[in-house]
Image (cartoon, rainbow, N blue to C red; front, side):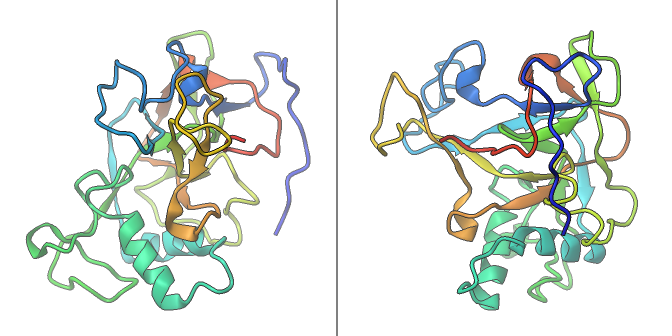
Length: 240
């Protein structure tokens, strides 16, 4: 795979195409969302660091897209993680109650389940759907004007077949293949803290390794300008 080695300086000019999604504690409140009163979360463990895009759209997960997404998700699975465990992690990662599918994913309840090509389940069900969403710490590529409240960013076109995994993966296109991050109320020592600095962790499905998913849309997509910051590539999406 290709490893990116070019950089964008910390004081990148406006013309630089790469930005990163700010972590919760880097925004106006200065707090992770578990502690931010504006979110009003009954949560003391951590919460997905979701950053919805402007177009609230869901991509139908066809057989081809599911196979591509499974390849992305398991790219960093530990060597000792069995195929059965990886398939279990797949269903859990794209669960209907999780942030990425948001009531349109897999479920243990037959009435709310969707077709799962990876596990060969739900042949009589409709397709699950992936939300056009990213999370804190990820890199995006700006392709439009940067002076407004919303900035256009590059995405994969979810209305078309997916790219080949070899051509578009986390190593080759980190601005299109994102990682799932958890905003936590814990410090670097693992203890709950009101003052920080706070940990941002990967989702647990790959036992501490990247959990990747595609950043998709069906047309021009935008991220709020106040959610974006300068970046140096390659970029580490967690903290510390």
